[in-house]
Amino acid sequence: MWAGAVSDPISLYRARRLGYSPARSKHLKEYHLKNKEIFEKRGCGTASSKSTLRPSRFSSPSFQEERSRSEHNLVNIQKTHERMQTENKISPYYRTKLRGLYTTAKADAEAECNILRKALDKIAEIKSLLEERRIAAKIAGLYNDSEPPRKTMRRGVLMTLLQQSAMTLPLWIGKPGDKPPPLCGAIPASGDYVAKPGDKVAARVKAVDGDEQWILAEVVTYSHATNKYEVDDIDEEGKERHTLSRRRIIPLPQWKANPETDPEALFQKDQLVLALYPQTTCFYRALIHTPPQRPQDDYSVLFEDTSYPDGYSPPLNVAQRYVVACKEPKKK
Image (cartoon, rainbow, N blue to C red):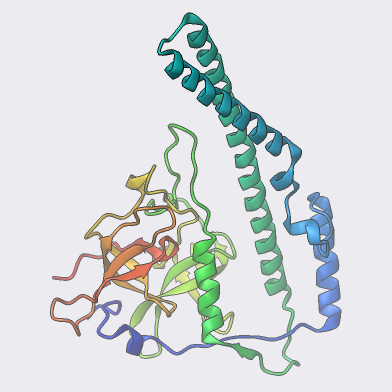
């Protein structure tokens, strides 16, 4: 029997805990001084500054000016149409005026889009910087063997963090004519793609009982010499490390696909996938029941479950972040 087939997902799920320990003051001081230098080099202020996480572009006068000018122009368009309806005619004057107003409105909209795209780029830069800091802290080892055992993070806290990661996954917003890139929604990574340290992946590992299962893991390193990854079980935070070949790793999406503009970048109804079972950190085989209809929607999936007459569970919601392609054949 394939290890990923679910007879009872909750009972099959391993009760694993996530632990951590506080850093010693000396290590913390060295760590924060190092990150202060990183922040200052990138022009983001100091690591302790409250403004570090607030990009100035969000409240920049240029954006407000663009928005005010755009709104004023839209009001003029509306008033012009109202006058035309009152006079019940389209004179050359109104035709010329509307052409100019619509040209300006188009330019204003493009200017707003450019400003918003720059703001999104700044958000991505900040998130990347924060991720670099987190990985640096992990590599530096803010705890050592002489410290007491790490306290266990409550199950609810871990689940909340996973939900937040899914909610904050950026939505792909391309320019007109752009196609969604790899790792957007259902679009797989390119053949030569190598996941970076800190990236979340689905990893196929052997469980204690010898069966194989897909778990949520974090990339530690990748060796080009051996073509193998080292990954940490997300539910163990470094306690359980696995060395796996590329074929046992599936990178998770890095962008959500917009169903309204890029429906082809989503898994379709009845398509076989691996999905993270709710309230666990394990992936199981499932069929897409309903794809997302709006950008904020989740997939509705049917997990393989032999405890039900038709072999599938009732529909359950799973975020785009935690749904990946399953290359194995559908079970009959």
